[in-house]
Length: 353
Image (cartoon, rainbow, N blue to C red; front, side, top):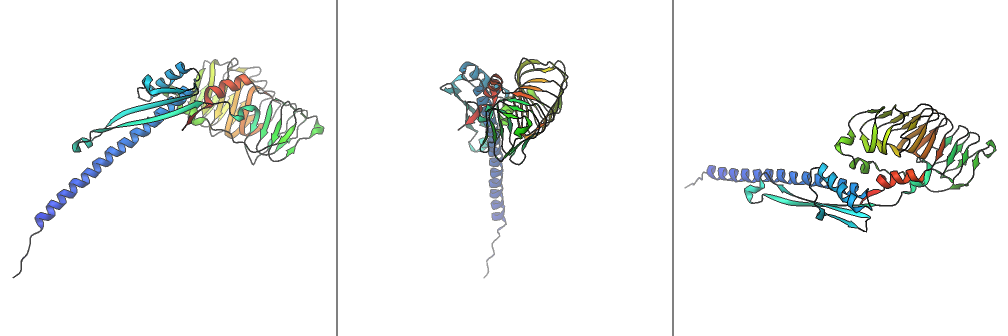
């Protein structure tokens, strides 16, 4: 005798069970994904708040308000008890949020509490702030072919230095890594000596400065700066910047651009004359054009070239680039007040573990 069993009912039950399990996993994946994304957003907000606060230290009152402001820009409330300081040199920001799940409530898990923390400090000036002229390339020499350049402050190149022009004056130590071609017989003066040294990297402050910009300070395309433009703090331009105006207003700060920065000045004109400004090209070049142009600030192009194309530009601050090009005589004087205002106010703030 043969017995046959009908398994159709069992298969249906098994299929239904597996469907429930698969749907459960799908729901769990959605909730976990939402949790991960929310935590990433909180980390970014905490980093921005901590960096903004650190830039105001040692003034803890201002630092606290700045941290709360930048947290609010990112959609988070930051009570005073979630902000702490260490010797007025570090600020720690804690953010907490209850993330509500879409499907977790079906299995008794309606949500989860997420907490993140970020600490930033206000350090001292970076080594690069010691220089009036800094050329970061390890394969392209710092070449000065023009005459009558004057540099009041230290000079550093990560490759060779080649001074082939006449009557150039260096009133600071000249550092090189590879070899010097100095042409002493051309009237060039090296009044603090010439020394061989080691390679030094150009710091990248773009992430910190981007984090300090509110949405109103971010320009999503090329920007032309003309008459009437005012700079009070910092802006981030996700493109190229062209400056066509003279005697611009504001208290100073920085202009960070993803691309090139072109500064066109007229004879005897002043750019932010009473202020201290850093033009920072993240990936491009900086072109300073115009004869007898006066600029008080820093030209900073860690991946590109700083081109001084106008005749007799006067720069009080420093020139820092992967490569530097002189086509006419320039006077560059390292200005401690400018260095302190720019690097201490923004660049020196950094995240720490």
